[in-house]
Length: 432
Picture 1 (cartoon, one colour):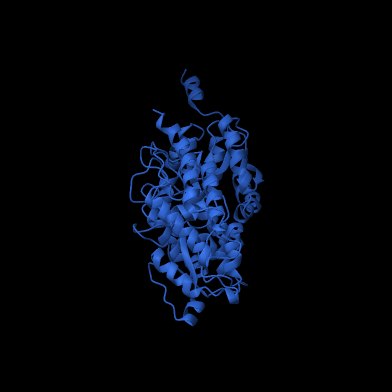
Picture 2 (tube, helix red, strand yellow):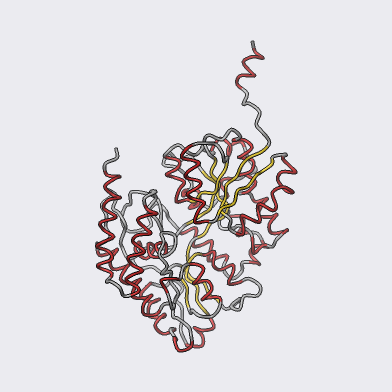
């Protein structure tokens, strides 16, 4: 009888293979190359990867996890999806695995990243691969040449004045580069951080749309005016990649964007390596305003290989993996921004000497729970954490992009956008 009871309580054996669906960015592809030799060889767990472009991966993950098909055991999700997926019961909580895996060291994960990957119930639902915030990058040599001084913690008003003084269109250099390309993950991301620090919000805590209120309207007008007056050429076609090219090729004096942009600017062979300064995201009414984003590993609740899946997640988010990348590929390529210990490693500190401290500070100061001056209905800084925000953010950014082109006023763009936001808010006010 004892033997029978024991066998019933023991978990069934798992297959030694898992399916992973992930975004095809460069650091993920490096992981794919390293897995067989450094994970499968040690654990015996084969990992079959499906890699998908960023603009498609969310759709595929949503389709598979919502159906709970179990086709993929693990998928890359961001902090945008995590809490919603957890609420819907699509993700397996990871707390029991974390408790048993003493080598993983959950306490080493930066607190804002931990909070952004936790559910409303306080449980952990994803582990980060890398994290980022946002900050202001500027050309130190250009500022010295023009006799300009960047404040240690600039306001947006100061940035606008500096952009005006640094703007030299006759020499092919804009005062600043800001995303003007429509998209909830493009223009809407930096715009929302400006909205937050100007005192605005997309929705109040009761899901009342606030896009035509002064805080949001003032921020949107400021953003559009700054891009039109001192931003890059063809701004409505410039997203993250376009502004990175502009900054790297000497066509912008400043750039406000993701901390991830610093690596390419400081890479060997970059024409601006050593010429860039990094300061916190500009503020107005808040103490900080940098965003928070992470690509992370989520475990599908219906997976039949949860223990094997956790072994992969643990390895892919580990200190051990970061050390492997540093040794095999180079410390500048480490998927950083998630662990406190990374910023203390001498090898990483040397590789990221120009921007490492500023990146860590930006992530530590990011607060996804209270990013503005008022309470919010969801967790998130540069987004509203509900699925409908992808469509809403796309729509609003298209309207404001048209304002940048001069096709309509900002006020007209926001009146249309307010109607769309009301529809989203109404759905959630009806929910218990």
